[in-house]
Image (tube, rainbow, N blue to C red; front, side):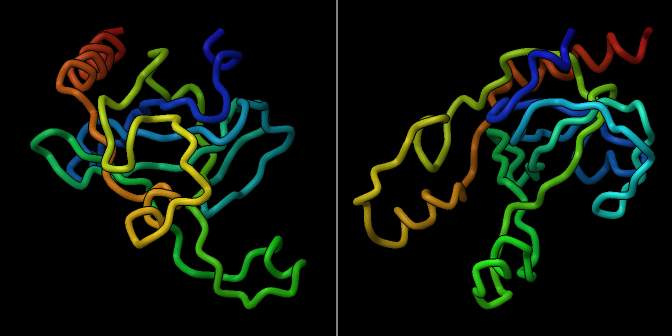
Length: 166
């Protein structure tokens, strides 16, 4: 089952609702931050309604920043107070990655999607803790563009067409 394969640091493609397809094209990319799980009871999370029984996975969405050599960037949430920071009595101004719950049935069932390259170095690489300077700080936060190859983009589009044809 596809949901059992899902886990932290997996790159997935998600079908876009038709009303938003002009913004991001026919799919979104997301980086999962945990395993898939079943919703126990109806709930509201980050303004979205989720129904009991749905299988979801936590993750962070990418946004398409560049079309020629498709460059994606993880979306940032606005600065806000967050429970972990409040628990440590830090000022309520932390910036966190925007966390969402992705419905597994809305995903495009392709395994092992990867970016071809990134401005922040090879994917999955652990950065040196001794690196300094603005570029190192930016890379450590995960910012910069990650690039999706044209072949991978076409594989996703092919899967969408197959999914749409039933």
